[in-house]
Length: 479
Length: 160
Image 1: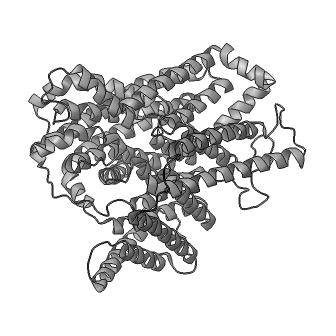
Image 2: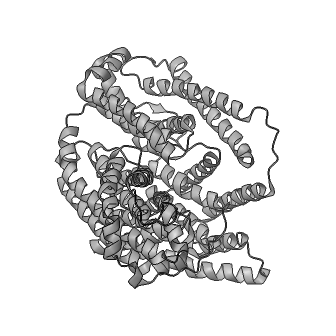
């Protein structure tokens, strides 16, 4: 049964990933909202299947339509679409799916190796380190917000405030409830997730072209990997896998950044590509596709071991884990080692299913791209409504979700990114609690600030924050 | 971006309003409820620091936006943007009505009505009205029972 849940997740993920405009994050939100009543292991199988399928599905429309199904497939269009124009659509998708499969497995392999090592290290972290790591995640998402860094920080701070609505966990004081019972229970982070990622997307899609049309077809035989092409792209695969994993590890960055960086690296390192980059180089398809899938392993490592989501998708998955009673963080490897193994198995299953169903179902997914959006959007809206109602069987929650959707739409169109806000709502509790614990331990704010540089681990994290801010600004410019 | 200047203004008004409400709440705790602001176990020390940060960010953001738009003539909304805003507001109002009707009418009936209307309104094709209505009704009559079956039987999701 668990395998079937995983398979169902993969199929939903592949379809949603292939449909332009429906992001992996949105897919994750919708599948999470379906699993409220499930037991934890079934839900994990389903959600992780959808995650792996969604990332792989993005390349199907990227190559056929020149429109990435997901953000992680942005770099795939640089050479994937020119390959299609040269009559090699089968080769392009064949490479994309095969290397995604390899990259995904490589990322999970590294997760299996580094997860326990990082878990041991994370046990030495105190409240200062926790505070800094959580802050790192949010601030990196803010800084990578399409060049609107200050707006990203504003969105993050608003998210932190929203996360504080309700009872203070330490003193029991009701905060920011305006004296109403309506807000006393706080705002559930899943509502914010569904509204800001799901419903917002429904509103945003109203502006884009109503339906994509494609008559492209893939030949199953042509999608199978060809030895001559594999030999050619092997060097690109060898460095793109580690690049994707490492970028996935960094809090706040995910497969999209990994794919762009890997493409940039490959462009510089491969002197004699099969064709010039941008004109259909096999290496230009392989590099981003390996990286965006190996980033899955990296992002899950950070999420499980530190409790910090690597990107918006893992933020949603982290929320789902909380919802089902699983608590990722430094003690995760000590308290729930069996779930670590289960997650690895589900990821391997999901990546394998995604490859085979991506091969066999690519034409079906191309047909689904033709579904008019006027049918698709109300269905997604209904899924968002049912998902937000299912949290506490309360219609007020649906109202909150709708309001979040409208705010998300207005924010998105005016340059305020919504990802930092969602991340802040999810991580707000950890940030505040660790900050206040550190404050109680040190006595006052100057002493707390001093402790951040005198404690070896927090100093290392501070240096990492400074270094990654600098590095990611460069990465962003590359993108 | 000009088309979205209006939404930019709405967003800015929202964040400033949000900041004012949050700061007002903090002042209420300090001056009315006599909660100490700067003590190690104060429940409002963290939000107070955040409020200061938010105000700084808003000032910087306002200044950079002003510089960006300075000297530019006021832009009128294009027809496409007007249509988009109208569609968003229509969808929001429609969805809100649907949510309010859910407890009164059965999920199946209200969802079929909701989907039919949205599918009809968003149908941009130049077809006859009857054809559009029939297509919308047919799609809803097919999709919604499938969704209902999936939610209630397979996923065991509680429905409104």
